[in-house]
Image 1 (cartoon, rainbow, N blue to C red):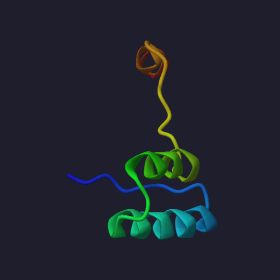
Image 2 (cartoon, rainbow, N blue to C red; image 1 turned 180 degrees about the vertical axis):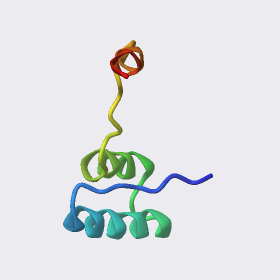
Image 3 (cartoon, rainbow, N blue to C red; image 1 turned 135 degrees about the horizontal axis):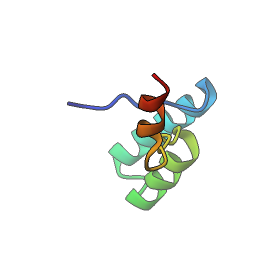
Image 4 (tube, one colour; image 1 turned 120 degrees about the horizontal axis):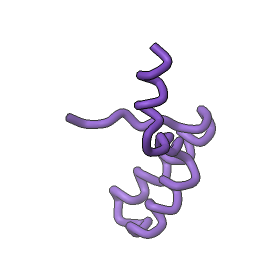
Length: 59
C-alpha cells in the first residue's frame, strides 16, 4: 500500500515534483531528494504515549 504524499502547499508540490524529475534523470542525488522531502512534505503528527487512553476515557 503506497502512502499519499502531503505537501505544505501547491508551490512546494511543484518544486518537489521538479526535483523528483531531476532525481529520476540522475542530476539530483539521494541526499538532495531527502532534503527536499523534509522541506516540502508535511510531517506526520505523532501522538504522545497514552493519548489514545485519554481519548477513550473521555467517552
